[in-house]
Length: 187
Image (cartoon, rainbow, N blue to C red; front, side, top):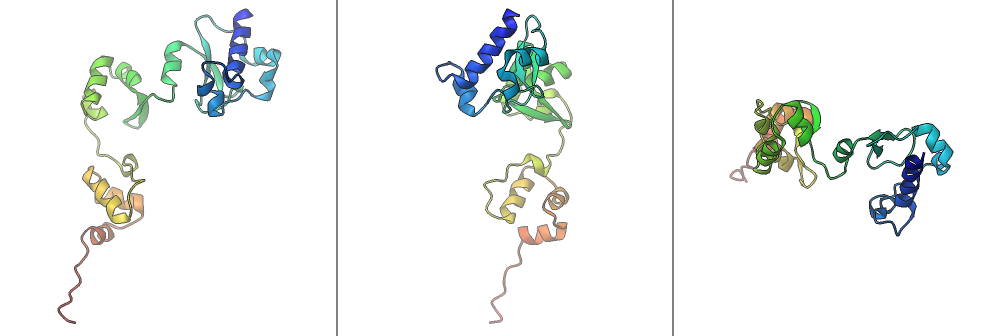
């Protein structure tokens, strides 16, 4: 029961004690403890006894401490749930580098090194590269549709996939990319 009580006290300190060394990552980010868990008895009833070698983990790293968002997790599981862990889309599945290395049986440091060198996740894993989809391309800083289309096309997206994404026909995309010059000779 002492380990569980320590977890409960530490959880509250991280969220409400501005002098706690981890406050900036929890309370400073707006993370709170639900009202029900302000009483230790309710926390103990909802979470059960703390398993050896595990600690409390919030499934949604930006969510509060509450029964629907907390589980007991190993240190490895918790490291994968940090907000600074990069995730990759591998054949439609979202994985961390470590998860991809385990799933595709490739040494973690080799995979991480290849990605660091600029390889796509598919190349680094030795998979057949997929054509990027428009959803993969960051377009927040584009000023107009023409710039969006150019950026997507330059990253390997087809006009058909760009058209589906933007709700345009291939012909309309072609007109936007290659506008007809205005003939002023008749004026």
